Length: 146
Image (cartoon, rainbow, N blue to C red; front, side, top):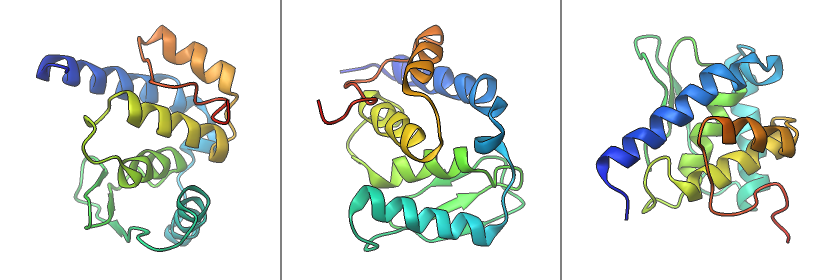
């Protein structure tokens, strides 16, 4: 069991990794139009879940500072976060598991797997960069079938 301080540190490390490493990737960080994000969310959801059932609605709110996913209430995008990285991050939250700590090992494993599958990232490079930020995950996301 992790402490609140450890959970907060996990979140800070992940956000720093996103802001420092992932934001440098133009495919992940390019601002997209709303229709593109809706279409991608449905495609990714079907690939990950096997069905469109339960796919969260997307909401766009220019007053928000940070995007977030709220179970049963969709994904809410902040003004400057209409990008694939944010979509994948919030879909990883929506896909669960809900009982897992917010940015714990299971979440990171799913998120990184989705970044490889849908964000065109090299799994070895992703793992190397994540390690430099002290980010660990519970399984080998690069080779989920092993």
